[in-house]
Image (cartoon, rainbow, N blue to C red; front, side):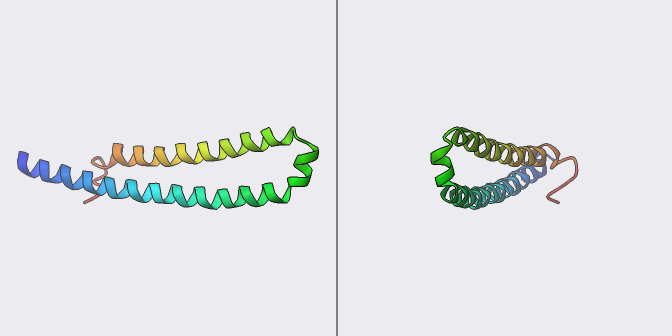
Length: 92
């Protein structure tokens, strides 16, 4: 029975690793899309930002929060998958 359990554990770990790669890829795509949007917004608002320099830290805080929240969300998804994969027989 131990051998079957080890095989099952290895299968689940392999599948979890593949899901982790997918989650990482999704996070990378989110970062790329949002960096493009941030670049577009900052380049379009450059004249305003040069006049009102106080807006730059506001933009940076907003951008930092955006990336932090997405990263935490993706890590929570992976953690939830890891926690419940045996309980729900997710990879069977």
